[in-house]
Image (cartoon, rainbow, N blue to C red; front, side, top):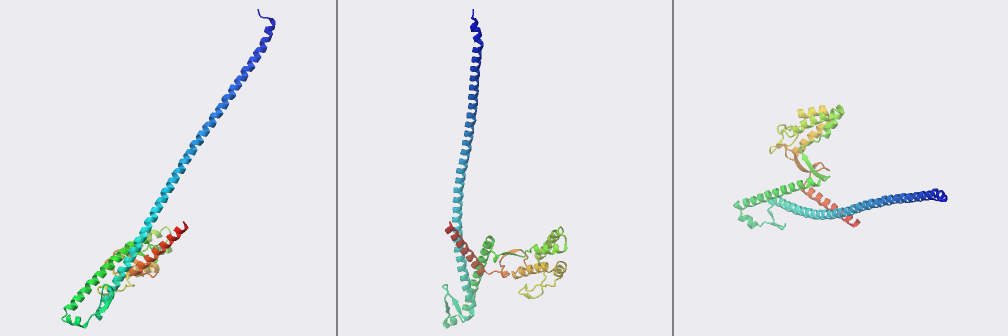
Length: 318
């Protein structure tokens, strides 16, 4: 049988036990929250580590791409240097060919005075004795035939140089000297003329219509607005009083009229009146005329020198 004193102490013991249990619950609860915090912090550290690894990989990749670009630039620079050297060598070759052609032209000019050019460029007076040996005419025929052969060879060589220059200038796209498409009109004067008389909405369509009509006219061999002044079968003067041209002038103004007439005169200058096709031609835009082969070679030579000088300055800055 329990003592009355033990019964009185029981509530006190229960309170102590409850307090102890509550303390332990709070301890484990705090420990759990601390564990969650540590886990979250660890997860954040892992994410940051992964992010840094991605950034490091990107930096390595960028460095590799940079090295690749530098290698490509160096390759392009070497290629450009080689190309410049090849162009310079080709220019020198063209200049030599032109010099040889000019020498052959000088030979033809001196034919009547009895002079003959040697391959070294020296000119000797043919002796009276040699002229007597060919007094029967056969020697003169042989000389004439030889000169004709040289002239034909010189023409072919010059034509080859001319073709190569046209091909080169298509890529170069110069300013003072460049390629002009002979026989091709510009749409600009037609549009400007139409804008003066029509609304901005109507003008482009009418300009295109006029442009297409006159472009076809220029390329039509049957349209010959030329006077009957002939020289070896080639018309030498444009008839500015042609009915179609005068109607164009009256209806749409001076600029459009001049554009068509100038294009027609360029066709005539290049000997394309019988063959009305658009052809590329070397053109001196500064003086508005056909460019000579010598001008083109000199122009290319100047551009190459400027390019090499610019390259040298960039190299020194680097």
